[in-house]
Image (cartoon, rainbow, N blue to C red; front, side, top):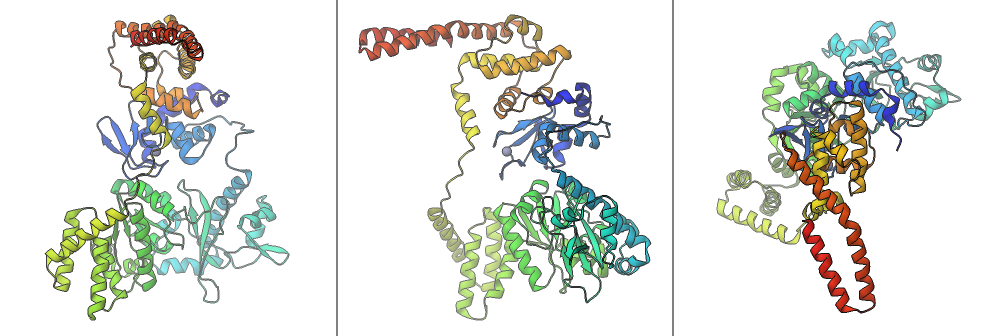
Length: 602
Ligand SMILES: [Zn+2]
């Protein structure tokens, strides 16, 4: 096993770890709730509706009871950002303003060189477009566009809004002078082909930099300001860094606010977000000109309890709201639909009526999905006609049957009753009949538990005494209890190989540190099985004032196993032999011996 930590001084790693509390770091990605000594949230590494992902502040570790992933703050960043160890350390060092020495990483680059170049090109371009907008005659018209919409200078800076010059050659020259290669830029879509040469695909447009969750620009959105420029809206093409279905506009700036409020507002356009942000609604994001995808929905659900959709009031906007709500419903999110009055859009509405009106008339009036659905579906029926009315009611009953909360169901049944002059009893019994029908025919088989969970569950039941003793000893080592004694009396002579490996790492740490913690141990290992074993041991509750007798008991149990295992193996071989020779008398005698030996051990 190559230890990547060797490249960095241990104290530096420790310093960075101490500066990055795991609860804070994980909170940047997952909404955590404190329950007892642990914090719980939805696991970012597997799909789930009930939180089984836990973070233990005291031990500075995380663990998912669903998929079995676990580790310390570095492992978490590695897993979620798909970084290698050095990249994760560097990331957390930057976050906590700790200087790191330059590290040469010859063979462990995760981000390709192409992507690094691309990031750098986007960074230069963002500054360049922004500068052109603010300080050049060229950008005046674009700047006026924002000013006319009441966007102030601070917001123009916050969102790094820009303008791409209309001249064919300027942007290309700018990038080539910075040392980028034209062919590479065309390939990744930063530039587009024009005859024999290259051109800026955004020329003559307002430019909105689109950032990833870390605030790095990975693409642009462009809006034409002159009628003759078509299409009106344009996005960077997809590449290694830019996946429209995974990114959300303004997510980098909104995510903390979203977590704090437990609510996110999803809008349709970049200008909607910018106007809302300026009006004080900082928990807003937008999709990138496409329908809300499941991956975006899941991301939002991890950060927010409630997801508010506030799209344009036109037919297309209502249709998109319905589609987005369906996607969110599929993943079990709490959905609200905030409709904009008067055929308007959020940008226009806020500009005309102000932020208070947006709060009172739009957000505060938001509907549940069912309420929205009941209204939305009316367009498919002519409710003045008897047969249509019946079909509509039938469709509503089917929908109501999918609602889990009986109180909520009752509420909508009352709505239907009032609207169609039906009795509540009839509606309730129809809904109940529908529930029975669907549970009978659509009994969805529960998903298979992940293999690890099955495994650990079984192992909990059947773990022999010696194995438990070994686990308790290791757990005590990690709590710095009797470390010298354990090391002296048993060394690495544990029965299970995996435990041998773990204690070897622990002893190595003890050579450098007076006291150690499990978090340090994670940096030493990369093997999944090993990490899971360590996590499972670290979660064993250990009494702070454990007595020496208890330790002796564990040691004793392990010694007995070590002494008796060879004997047991020998007997088993003999038994097989006797059985093969059909010597039943001898086989029985040996079997009894084996049973006795096994019983003594427990
Ligand atoms: Zn998980």
